[in-house]
Length: 147
Length: 90
Image 1: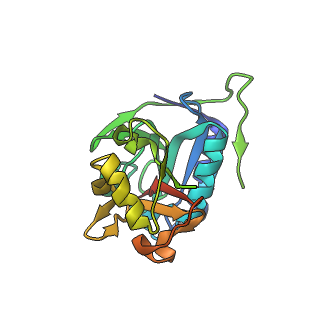
Image 2 (image 1 turned 90 degrees about the horizontal axis):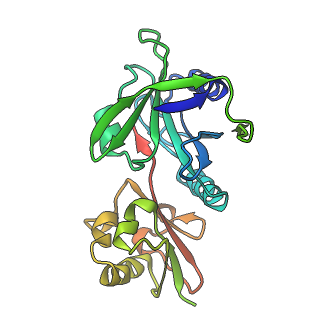
């Protein structure tokens, strides 16, 4: 199950709608091994496509180095689907590289329910999981939105 | 001073869970070949038909080798070669 703060969900949806019809993408980092998404980092979609995304390689390096220095890992990896339902496509499954991460998909096509969905993807297998949206975390956990 | 290679989590099963590997070489391709000698199987995770897989990013210091000379990119003592799985999908 993915437990995630409502402000992070709102931020992902706002980013996805703003980027539509281009697919949006990003990560939410958190302390390694914690399963708590805290620090939302929008990523540039180097593909600038309506059906594909690729994290800008240069930005990815900087973000990954920063996560390493902060003892973080990507807890959530998110992207939007601009013309299909929020379910992993074949490429989502084939190219998934982070088995510990929650893969969140945000639909931006009005024909589909405007609800995010979350999946675990490992060894070419997809398992949908429940998303619990909460209004507060434990007091010691601090949210951060990276511009 | 050798070159330091930073190994991503998903490939550390091939490197005895080591995150950093010190290795010699003058080009990225040579660094990978020497890693293959020490950690068999790692080359096949990175290279196909003479090029790095499109779903693998390789950097020398802060530079994506695709924007340099690919696997022929030169490396010098003290350089850091970082391997990252590209985050890409549909």
